[in-house]
Structure formats: C-alpha cells, structure tokens
Image (cartoon, rainbow, N blue to C red; front, side):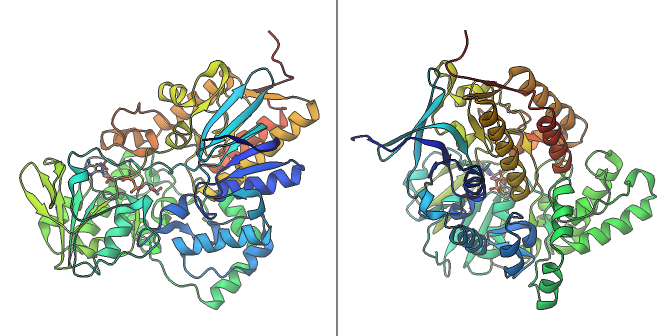
Amino acid sequence: MTTRTLPEVDAVVVGAGFAGLRTIHLLRELGLSMQVFEAGDDVGGTWYWNRYPGARTDTESWAYCFSFDRELWQQWDFRERYTAQGEVLEYLGAVADKHDMRKEIRFSTRVNGAFFDEETSRWTVTTEDGLEVTSRWLITGLGWLGIAYKPPLPGAETFKGEAYVTSQWPKDPVDFTGKRVAVIGTGATGIQVIQEIGQVAEHLTVFQRTPNYALPGRNHALGPQQQLALRRDFENQWEKTFNHVFGFPMAPANRLGSEVSDDELQRVLEAGWEAGGFHYIFETFDDMLVDQRVNDAASEFVRRKIRAIVNDPETAELLCPTTHPIGGKRPPLCNFYYETFNRPNVKLVSVREDPIQEITPAGLRTGSAEYEFDVIIYATGFDAITGPLAGMNVHGVGDRTIAAQWADDAKALLGLASPGFPNLFAVLGPQAPFASHPPVIETQVEVIGKLLQRAIEAGAERVEATEEAAQAWSDQCDAILAATLLPQGMGDRPWFLGANVPGKKPSTLCYLGGLAAYRAAADNEVAAGFPGFTFTKSPVPA
Ligand code: NA7
C-alpha cells in the first residue's frame, strides 16, 4: 500500500468518543492544529460499538454528558433516568454538530502505529489505510473498554448458528424471535442483554461463571417537571458530580455504618435499595467498601433480595454472589434481571465448577452437558484499560512499545502520562480515577490543557512524566486499593484490576481515591508547576 503523508499538525487525537470530542474543544481553545482519527464511521467511541440490545448508562443521564456546554445541557431532552445507548450517540452527535467538530475528524480510519522520534520530539502516526502524519502531541481518547475479550474456546469457528460479541454488535437489529439463544457472561453487559433478550427469545440459556451483586437501577422516564427542575439546577448537579467519589450527581452519605446498629444498617440499606442504582452504595454508608461488617451486611442484604425475587430456590442460590464482597467486582445495574429468571423460557447454567469446554457446530459443550442454540452471544468483557492503547502499536523512547511497558508495569502519572512516552497523553490511561467516565474525561482533558499551556509558555518541545512521580502515583493507587475490601474480590477476576484476561498481569489499573481527590491532586500538580513532569527542548540533552 502506498503511504500518503498528511500535513504536519500540532496534535494528533485518536478517538471521537467523549474524550476525543472534549479534546477537540480543548485544542481549539489553545489554538492548536489537529488531526483526529476515528475507527468508527461516526462519533461515539465506546458507545458507537456497544450497540447491543439493552445497552444503557449506569449513571444518571444528566451527569453522563459534558458540563462544558451549559447551553446544550440545558436544552437537552434527558428522556430517562439512565440514557439508552442510541441517545448517548444522539447527544455526542449533537455536540459534534453544534461545535462543527466533524470537519476535524477522519472517520473509518484506524490508527495502527505511533512512533516517537527522539531527535525531533515528534510523533509519527500511521493508519491502516496508509496515511501518515507527524505531530508534536499525541492525545489518545480510546476509553477503557475498546478491546473485546473473547475467551479462546475451541471450535468457535465451527458454530453453524449466529454468533455475536456484544461490543461488536451489528448496526442492523438482530431478531431473536423463535430462536434458542445462549448468553455467555453475567457482567454489567451480560445483565443488560439478558433482561432484554429474555423477553423475546424462544429460549434463553444464561451461562454464568461468577454471580454479581446486580443493583436495581429503577430506570424511569423523566417528566417535564423533572426536566425543568434539572435545567434550573446546572451548577448544583455538576458541583455534586465533580465532588462525588465516583462522579455521580449524589451527595456523600455522611454516615458510617460502623457507627450504627444492625437495625439501622438494614433500614438505611433498604432505603438505598429503593432509591435504586448506585445510591445503594454511595448514599447509604461511606464505609461500605472499607468496613467488613458494613460490607457483609450490604452483601447479605442483596442476597436476601435475590432469594425473595427468584422463585426457584436452586436458581436463586446460584445467582447469589458469595465469593467476593460487594464492590469486589464492578456491580452491574439492572432492571428486572433477577425477575428474568422467573420466566419459563429462561434458564441459568452455572459454569463455575463445570466450565464451557468447547463450541460445537450445534451449540456448546460443558464438561457434563451439550446444548444446542441458534444464537450465541459473547458478553465476556474487555482487555480493559491498558488493552486499547497497548493494541495501537505505540513506540516510545528507545523504541520500547507501550504494550511491553504496561504488560510489566502499567503506570501513568495522574492516569494520563507514562514515563518513556513523551508528549503522549492518554485520556483514561491506566490509574485514572475509577468513576463515571464523562466527568473524569473532562477533568483529565483540562489537566492536559494546562500541561500543554505550560509547555508552550516554556517553549518546551518535550514533556514527559518522571519515573519517580509516576511510581509515587502508582504506589498511591496501590495503597488506596489496599485500604479497601476490594482485593478480596481478586479471585473472581475483576477487570479493573486486570484480572479477567488470562496471561495479563493483575495490577492496580485504576485510582480508587475518588474523583474529588483526583481533582485535588491534579490541582496541586498544576499549582506547583508540574513537578512530576520534565519540560525540555529538543533534542534531548545528553
Ligand atoms: P465483565 O464485567 O468483565 O464481564 C464478563 C463476563 O464474562 C463475566 O461474567 C465473566 O465471568 C464472563 N466470562 C468470561 N470468560 C468466560 C468463560 N470462558 N466462561 C464463562 N464466562 C466467562 O465485562 P462486561 O462487558 O460485562 O462489563 C465491563 C464493563 O463495561 C462494566 O463493568 C461497565 O463498566 C461497562 P467471570 O466474572 O470472569 O467469572
């Protein structure tokens, strides 16, 4: 293939989801030229690809968007408590249109390499269709969930029916009526897809390896009164969101379970369960994820609810998580997930002790049984957090790849800059805050903006996180994790600790100190003049 070289720009941006669009806005504010590449044929990023039935946010809709465009926010029709996938795309499309962003983006163009030149301190970025462009800065907005993990089950290619991976879902609707369907996986994705397809498939078999604490989302339409009230509440909603530990528009509970009686624990948990969604965790007790007694009570509370909802006691027991504490894996939100197992056409098969051995032409086989299906759906997760950038063939100083670097030591100062990869800023890199993504993205893009401003003012051509500062950030991530109960979930393979992909080295891939603490740490770094970074001119002094 012949290579076509595009004119040099100040910054190459990869991805046109939340992070890419927010970065375009930033670069324009800074007056920097850019080239944006997006693999999909439209904006949306993770939400572009994850178009499986039932896909929806787990964050309240009015905080799963941007705060930078107040006008659009106040005009936007937030139709439901949680935004359906198609509406997330509508919103991002509206952002792109309003700000005339599409002209910056080359769609249907997948980046397949990025090479740092130590002489010129510039990146050269290449694409699958033969383009090449050089830039001072490389900003990636690939999200945490861009690379599907599909277990390498033997025989997968022999299956005669239809097979789908949830994060590579076709654009045309799939008709499940009259079909025997299998879903493998019961994470946040599996749970959304199961409750949807259970209503239409002739028969649905759910293959579960680890049960989760699925919390009732209690989704509902937002009426005109609620919408009006929201429109008047812009500052308050965003202040709450940016100050909330997980970036939700919620106030902290300001209550410790360790200080209340067992009866009071139950009363508050019941209220949180009724409120729905992550209110169960974040508006009940601030110590739920660190205090064993509180966590045990909260976990047992969910198990009791499962037993009360699911009619068949054996199925109910299989659905009860017992091997990790609540929070040890990312709790999914659901609407009628447990109720789905009361339908006569839905069956749960536990593959915890009896794993899937192979996919057959007619279906699949566990150690003890064979099943026949018309459709198999893989809801088996992602090579999360590090996977997307590791898969982009990024070569830094000394030609070391980011894949090799992160396979061994996945650290990034403030979750966006890894030593050895100068001038590369990864929005939602490893050790970024584990919180609702849009407010994390807005925060990180603002930090990148300040870094770029500082570099421009200093006439620096090369900006790089120091090894010491990145290590200190990583150590802090480890210490915060160790202070919680979450490591107790390690045996159940949480993706946010890199434990779900066989062969991947588990590590603290996220910052669990909360969004507010992250913002404070970032503010300190900015105020102190970025002591964790070196700013130098090119070529690098020996
Ligand atoms: P997850 O949460 O990683 O879930 C993947 C699911 O697939 C999980 O239930 C896995 O079981 C299951 N899985 C993976 N491999 C197998 C095999 N070989 N056999 C049976 N089951 C298997 O990914 P999601 O897409 O649901 O959610 C990711 C995030 O997206 C979510 O947390 C939100 O933030 C949005 P396991 O638990 O490993 O036993």
